[in-house]
Image 1 (tube, rainbow, N blue to C red):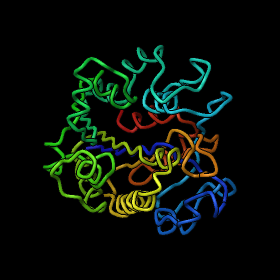
Image 2 (tube, one colour):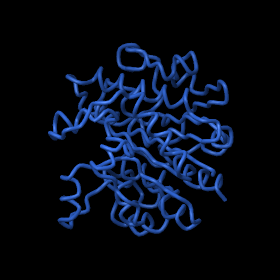
Image 3 (cartoon, one colour):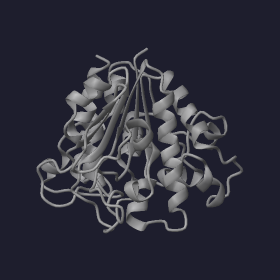
Image 4 (cartoon, rainbow, N blue to C red):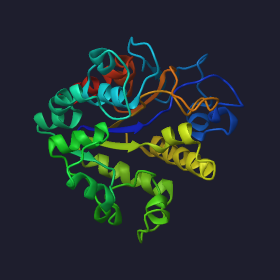
Length: 300
């Protein structure tokens, strides 16, 4: 089975080598240091080591202003230049006139059209399903794509069985903020679960949004723990990934890499590929709108 794992990290770009405002230089990040022996910067943004590639992807897409999540994620998951189509960057949710395109061309639907197995690995709490069932659809690109395509959205049941992941990786917010009776797991455990899920499907997506939250709101009380949890999780994924699985880690715009501002940046979006077709991904992806079709070509 051809298996591709896509890990989407909201709001991580490649920024300046700045130990005051770039947290990757300020605090260190083992994902970069252990895998590549270097931390990427705008002056040094391409690394390759042991068939793992790191580079910056254009998130501006020829449009002035700061890239936003709605158009950036639509560009990634529908394979179109969304900001050019509507004449602006827009977010955090997809622009209304983009919804028909998202419904027809989202990456889940395209895989299903090829009779492939797909899986969205994020679990959602009951409050989310109550919101959706109420008829309100102010949702992220990924959630809408699943609803449009009939892809199952995982619940606490799958999370308890280890067959899905919480959005924060370790279940901590489900326990501390939502009151669920769940174990707080190690990021290494979450990584192993995600790799197992990916091995059983042609296309698997895991979405991580706290990186964008760290950039906007800083989450001062939890910053170091959240930052470290993501780091350990990514290191485990990259070092334990089976050779037969293709991995792409991507983002929609810059933010976290520059804590001098709470706004997004125009920096290149962080992109990492590993596994079976890592070189093909690197050679084919220069901008966000090329990600979906590049992944699909691996399965055609």
